Structure formats: structure tokens, C-alpha cells
Image (cartoon, rainbow, N blue to C red):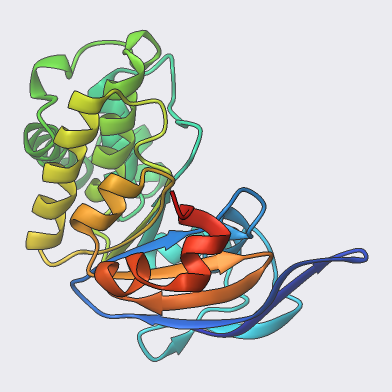
Length: 250
């Protein structure tokens, strides 16, 4: 589903990533872990087109997306969520999710301005599908609330709902459990598994090791911009280099 070949990123004289390669199987949950400064978010930014790599290639399926514009990737089935929740605060919860579906809208400016029948039908469909995704994430009863008034944990769920509405093949989640309490994290784990059951591939950067070890099929470990290890949760837990560099030996 996703393949990275020799990704290197240099900022001035600083090498943030060096020759990072790994593949993500379709329908899997893959975790990317590592200490702060390991290059995890930089890697996500390269995959999603926010940064351009110094060397290497990114493939989505068989398509090389290395130099695609960020806004074109959702149409190819690749979306992401952010470490800091990014919502349209003055819009309702429902309107935020509808934005995700509008990425695939066929109606043009003329149709929208004059409320033509095709545009009205499409807008009704977008609204109905958005409500379905809110129901999927347990937020249907908050559809009419202003997004800016949501508690932090619900904001996380809304961002995921909006990403799902874009009909992705793969979602990249940047620290989805950051700022959540233990109950919310447990509910997030259930939700991520449910998303995978719909056929969507998930890649997540996360510092919550209990969550990562619980839900991931495969884990990639970065350290100082390089790939340190790759394997199943059990293999990563037993890897001496990982224990020394990140998990700690106590």
C-alpha cells in the first residue's frame, strides 16, 4: 500500500532522515516510533507532500507520489491527521466532516451559486455520509456543536471522522493518543481497529507504547533519523538496540 525507498531529508547542514526504507501492507496497522527528534513527523510530512525529500521515493501502490502536491493526495486515497488537532473552530462538527467529502465534490462554482438540482442532490448525499461517519466514531449527537467548543478528546475524534469522510485507502495519524486520558486512549484503540476492519490501512506515529504494542501489526523504529529496527511488536520489544535507544531496559 505504501513504500518508502531511501528517504533522506537534509535541512541546511542537518540530516533529519537518512536512507529510510520500509513498506506498509494493505489493511495493516503500522506504528512508527522513536525518541523525540528521531524524524517521525518529518517522515510523515514527506509522505504527505508538506516537505520534499532530498533523496528517495515514496510510492502509493505502484504510483510514485514523491513530488505530488499535498492537495492532490486525498484524491488518491492518502489522508492524515495532525499531532495538534486541526479543525475549523467556527464551523459545526457536521460541517467539519462535510469538508472531507467536499474533496470529491463534482459540483462547480456555477452549480453551487445557482443551487442547481445536481448540486442540491450532491450536498444532501455529503450531509448524509458525514452523519454516518460521525455515527461511526460515536459523535453523531454532537453534529450541531461548534467544533471550537469540543473537549480535546472529542476534537481528536472529529479530526479522524473528517479524514474518514474523504474515503481514504490509507490514513497517517500523527500521535493520535497525545493529550488523551487512559479511557479515551482505550476507546481510540477500539476505533482504530474498527477503521482497519473497513479495509483502510493505518500508519501512526505514537509515543504511547502500550497502545502501539496493543494494536499494531508491524512497527518501524527510527533513531537519529535512521531506521533502527522493523518487525512485529514482540520482535521490537525484544530487540536489544531498541531497548537501549528507546524503550529503556528498566
